[in-house]
Image (cartoon, rainbow, N blue to C red; front, side, top):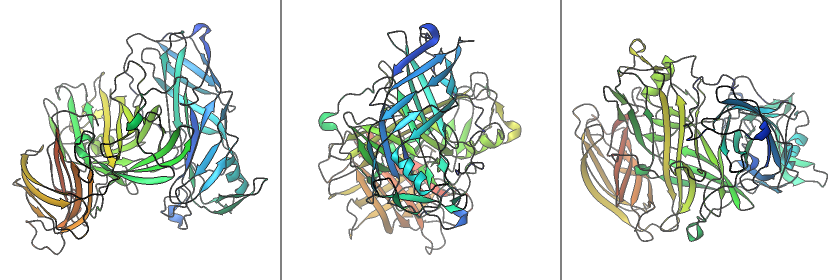
Length: 633
C-alpha cells in the first residue's frame, strides 16, 4: 500500500479511559450470545471527504498541508447502506463482554462524488465488507459504552476504483478505524425484543503522499471512458478521510415542516458565531480535597464556522465543518504549546477565572483548535434538520491550564485530539446533546451544536494554581474530565439595512469595570461607524481602544429574534485603532467584538490583541459578561 504512515501513527492512544454514565438497569445480552440485525438504511452510510491538493513544496509533504486545494473544496460522497450485521458476544467478566462483529456484505445506494467548483462524478458499486481481521470491542453492560474498539472494513465504490486506476501502484488498503489520527466509537442499547441495538461511527486519515513507488500521485477527473479509464491531474499530497456509520435503529426527530432550513448542495457557507450561546469548557471534578469540589470552567468564544455542504443522497445532505477565527482577524491568534506550529486556532475564547471552592486559576491563551488531519463530517436529515446519529468533533483545547496539564502528564496522555460526541438521543434520553440545522426567524440557516467528551482522570496529575509540577495534585478515584463545546451560529440571507447602536457598562467576569459604545452599520460599505472600549483595570489590560478602521461586520439573529428582515439582534465586528497607553499610533491594535441585543440573551464580548510581534499573551485586554449559567445553543 502506498499510503503514508509512521509519523502520524495513532497507535499511542491516551491512557485516559472514556467515561460512560451508568444505566438505570444493566444491559442483558441476547439469548445464545449471538444476534443478527439489519442496519437502518437511513442512519447507516459510508463515504469520504477527499482533500485533493497538489503540493509542490516538499515541506508540505507527505501529508498535503499546502493551500493548493483543487476543485474549490473537499470532494465529498456518501452512500446509505442496506444489509445485516452479526454480533457474537462472549460471557461477561465483571460486567464486561467482549464482542466480535461481522458485517457480511453491506450494499450502498448509487450516488455522486462532488465538489463546489464543478466536480461531479457518478458513483456506483458501493459495498462494505469484512476484512480478514474481524472488528471487535468490549461492552460494559452497566453503561452500554464500548472500549478497546478496533474496526476493519473493505470499502469499495467506483471513486476508489478510479483513484486506483490512475495510480496503478497503489495497493488496496484494509480500512482500520481508528487507524491513523482517526476515531472509533460505539454504544449498545436494550431493545424490547431482548436484543441490543448497536450504533457505530468510525473515521480515519489516509494520506497518499507525494508519490507511490516513484509515480507522482494523481487524482481522477470526472471524464471517463465506458471502460472506466478517467482523465487525471497531478495531486501530490492528496488525502482520503473515509468514514463509516452503522445503526440498527432509525434516527429520531420531529419533522421540521416550514422550519426546515434551506440546505444547498456543493456549496461553502460561513456561519457567524453567537457568543452568548457559544462556549467551551470543562466541569472539572478532580476528586482532591485541596480543590474542595467541582470547578466549572467556561469560556465564551468568537469566530465563525465554515460549512461545506456536499451532494444530496436520498433525503440527506452530507456536510463538513471547520471552526474559523473572527472575520478580518489581523492579529496573532493564540497558539498552544500542546499542538505546536501548523495547528491553527479556530474559535477564540475569553480569558477567564476557573474557580474551585478552595482554589482559583487564571486561564490565558484560550482557543479551540480543530484536528488538522481529520474532517468533521455529518449527514443532515432533510425531514428534521438533525445530523443523523452522533456527530464527532475532534478538537484541541488551547489554554494555559491545559498546557500545564499535558506537560505534567507527559508520556501518559497522548496529544491526540479530544473527540466530542453530539447527536440524537434515543427515546427517553435528555435533549442536551445534539447537532442540527434549522431555519431562523428571517429565513437564515442556524447551526446548533452541543457535544461532550467524558473521561476518567483518576491517578493523573492536575496542576496547582501556580502551574508548578512540584505542587500538582493526583486525581482521586472518582476524578473526571467533562469537556463540552456548545455553538450557535447563523448564515443570514436577507439584505442588511440597519445600523446597530448602543452603549453599556458592566463588571467583567475578571472583575474589571467596563464601558463601551458603538454605532456599526450592518452594511459596512462607505458608512460611518464608531466603537470605543474602556477597561478600568489598573494593570496592563486597562486602557481605552478607539476603532478607526472597520475590518469586518456580520449581523445575525438568534433563534428567538423578533427583528424584521434587514434588522438583527446580534452584531459581530472587528477593526483597527489606537490603544491609550501606547506611546505612538503608528502600529494600531486590533479588536474583535460580539454584542447581543437579543431579549433574554444580553452579552458583550471584546478582545483587543497585542501587536503581531508580541511574545507574551496575545490578548492585551479582554472583557465579557457571560450568563451566570450555561445556556444550551
